[in-house]
Length: 538
Picture 1 (cartoon, rainbow, N blue to C red):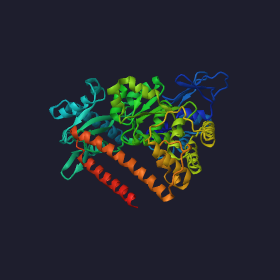
Picture 2 (cartoon, rainbow, N blue to C red):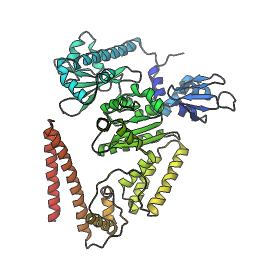
Picture 3 (cartoon, rainbow, N blue to C red):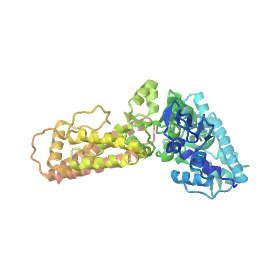
Picture 4 (cartoon, helix red, strand yellow):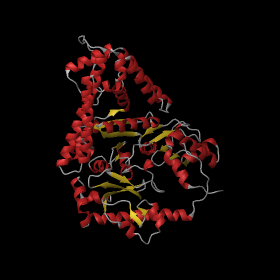
């Protein structure tokens, strides 16, 4: 019998949930940390067949059958190993590789990678306590990190010189390059990370596979990560997961935040079940890993536009992973803050309030439809309904999808087609407000000129106006009406730019190098003002 590459079978086990695979043949009910059902391998009336999502195994306490997703498919469908993994590969969306034994040279190479990463981390840790790393140590302590936290997360400092290239001169160059720690230049190898605060990235087993370096001089990007290597793939790596794994099971949920520092501070301040993606948007692989640990997820993002966009993407990706036991929620940190700042100012109690105030996925999607489309018009409602259907169609659990569809049909009928515009007891995202005169003018335009409402529906939806209110008639033609809406949009845009400039000016006074950003904003402000002036003269 040929030996098979464990990398591929391990990836199958990582991508596919044993609960999903077994659940297609055996009705399962969750009790405690395990799922239970009647064993498919012997006749029984009382469920003694246990499935453990975390370990990826099933076990029958009646007949003793035990195994993982591969053995389950083999036994339940009476097929051989290759047929089973071919079927599972199709479900996971993976291409079947040519199977061959893992060469001893590859095993040795991978072991050398792990050793290089661990030794590099030791060097970075020492440099953080060296005089050359004083500014990095001051920064991380100013961010609220104590010595125990620095030691636990093995935080370090990469100096400005090529310390790794120089320290690893006796290591095979190809292996050093393969870790992403160094690159080859005209004059030999040079360090990829220089003058960076260093956060090691661990795999699920606690081995260092990469690093994330944070700039200390205000330069962009704030973080740079090791490029993808044999050991490290950003799409399949979650920061802090190795520390959070046990806590996720104890808390019966995971919390997902946007950055590494946020994740560490959350873990050290009462929320050990917190993790973060690595400088990339959430991926299907991230969600798959989290759902295998626990299907209850709270996405906690900043309340700004970027945070709302990240939440919308998370909602989109998580849909196929939903099951009737899933509890997915969205929490937002408002006021220009992030979890790290909230914990500093208000402590765990303030953060707990934000987590407790998280809204369900059902409500989040409903709010997104109402905010993204002008549901006061037939066209807007049609677009919103298509938007909701597009999302719910991604739910693979048929019964659950039907329940979602029924829920939204009820809401659409009660809130849109019955024209009940009373405020709902659903948390809303804060939107810009307008004065009464402007509000009445906008309402009149929307009802008088529906074509204008359709054209600027995305913007009008952000004003949080009830377009069914009765307002006095206004003597305004369609061209003037459109000029009014465009002018209002430009004014809102101008106000946002001014607010951003105010924040940047405060950072400039605090010593941050943001002059280029302020100059860019000034150019945008001048351009917006010119457009407003042009509108006036038309």
